[in-house]
Amino acid sequence: MQLIRRIFFLLCLTGMGLFRSYGQGTTDGVFNVKQYGATGNGHTPDTKSFSDAIAACVKAGGGTVLVPAGTFVTGSFQLFSNINLQLSAGAVILASENEDDYLLQADYGFSGSGAGGKRLGIIFAVNAVNVSITGTGTIDGRAEAFMYLDSVQVSSAEDGKYTRQGINYMNQPEGKKDAPVMWKGEWIKRPGTQIIFHSCKKVLLRDITIRNANDWTIDLNACDDAKVLGISIDNNMSVPNSDGIDMYDSRNVIIADCDIRAGDDAIAVVSTSNLKVSNCNLWSRSCGIRIGYNGFNDNNSGNLLFDNIRIYGSNRGIGIFQRRKGNMENMLFSNMIIDTRLYPGQWWGHGEPIHISALPGLGSKEVGTISNIRFSNIIASGEEGILLYGSEESALRDIRFDHVQLHLKRGTLTDYYAGNFDLRATNDPKLAIFKHDIPAIYARYVNGLTLEDIDVRWDPSLPDYFTNAVSCDHFQQLTIDGFRGSAGPHAGSAGAVIAISEGRDALIRNLLGESGFQRVAETGKIKKTTRWLSQKNIKDLKFYPPVSEKK
Image (cartoon, rainbow, N blue to C red):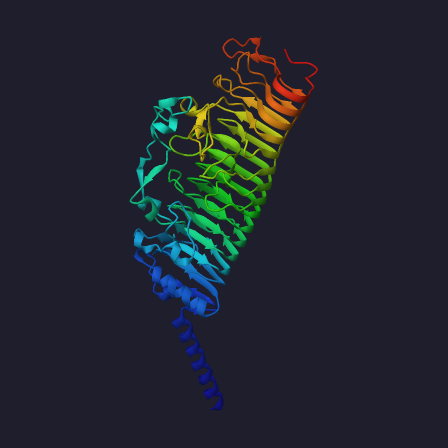
C-alpha cells in the first residue's frame, strides 16, 4: 500500500511538471512561438506571439525561441541577450505588409541603418550579448509589397552631362531591363534593414536563408565578435539598396561559406576592423565587396582579409572609396575570380573588377588616406578596367598587385555606357560620371604602386578608347615587374602598352607580349601599331625593354 501511494505521488508530480512546461510554452529552455499564440498561417499577424515567447525566454534567463514549420507574418520584434532564435526547416518569417508594424530606430537609441535610415525591419537586437539566429528556415522581406517591380528609376539629363555619350547615355534601345525599380510611398517610411544588431557582442548568424529584402538585409552596427556562417541571401536583383551584409563601426567579424545575391552591395564595410571573409559567392548590382562611402562618421577601417571568393555578374567587383576623414589601411584580397559588367539605369559602378578612389565627397573638404592594399592571385574580367584614382588631397599609398590576369571584354551595353569613369559620390559633379579613355589598369596619384606578374587580354572588337595596358600619372615609386600583354586592339599608333607621365622613380622590366604589333581582325595581317612605352616628365626612370618581340 505504501508503494502504491509513492507511485501515485510521483505520477502527480510528473503531471504537474508537464502541465507547468506546457503552460509556459517551454521544454528544457525551448520556447515554441506557437505555444504563445502564433498561428503560422501566412495571414494572421504573429508579432505579439513572437515577442511574448521572447519575453518568457528572457525571464527564464535565456534559451531558444523556436519557430516551427509554417509561415509567420510579423513586423519588428526584438532579441535580447542569451537568446537563440531557431528557425526550423520549413519555417518562414514573412514581413508584414503594414508599414505601421515597423518600429522606429530612434526609439532604441540609434539611426541610419538602411537606405531610409528611420525604421527598423523585422528582427533587431540592441546591447545584447550572446545572441544568435540559426537553423535552416527562412526570413522573407516581401520586397514586392514595397516596390513597383514593373517601374524603373528614371535618369536625368545631368547623369550624362559629362559622359562620352552625352544625352544618349543610358538610352540603349534594349530598354531598362535590370535597372533599379521604384519604391512605393515615401522613401523614409519603407521598412528598414531586415536584421539589425546594434552594439551587440558575441553575435551568430548560421545556416539561415534571407530572401526578398526590401532594404539592407543584415546590419552589424557597432558590434564586437560577430560570425556569419553558411547563410544564403537571395534578393530580387532589381530592388535598390537591398545590400547583403553591411558592417559599420564593428570589429572582430568573420563571414564564411555564404552565398549572397543582392540588388546592391553584397558585402559593405565601413569603419570596421579585424574582418575575415572567406569561401563566399557574391552577386551584386553594385559592388561585390564595398569598403568605404562612410556617410555617418570619420572613423578608421583596417586589417581586412578577403580570401577564396567568387564575384560574378556585378557592376563592380571590389570597390574601396575614401570620401571624408578617417584612414583605411591593411587589406588583403587573395584567390579570387571576378567577373563584372555594365548594367542599365542608376546603379553605381562601371564594370570595373577593382576600383580604389580617394577624393572629397559627401560634403567633406578633408579626405583620409587609403594605404597598404594587396591583391594576389586574381583572375578578373570586366567591361572596363582596374581603376586607381587618388587625388591631390589624398594620394593612394602602397598598392600592390601580383599574379593578376585581366581580360577586358565587350558587352551589350559597351556603346551606350562604356568609356567613362564613375567616381560617385563626389563634391564636384564633373567627377561623378565623366568621359575618359579606358586603360586596362589606370592609376592616378598613387605613391608606391607595384604591378608584378600581370597578364592583360582584350576582346578584339573593343572601341578605340580602350587604350593602354597600363597608364599612370602623378605618381611616385612605380614598379612594373613581369608583364604580358598589349595595348588595346584599336588603340592606334598613339597607344603605347605602358603610358606614364608626371611622376618619379619608375622601374619597368621583364616584359613579354606583342607590344609593337597587332593582328588586324578583318584581314588577319600583322601591322606595326604601338610601342612599349610612352613617357612624359618622368624623373628617375629605369626601363628595360624586352630582348625581342614577336613579329
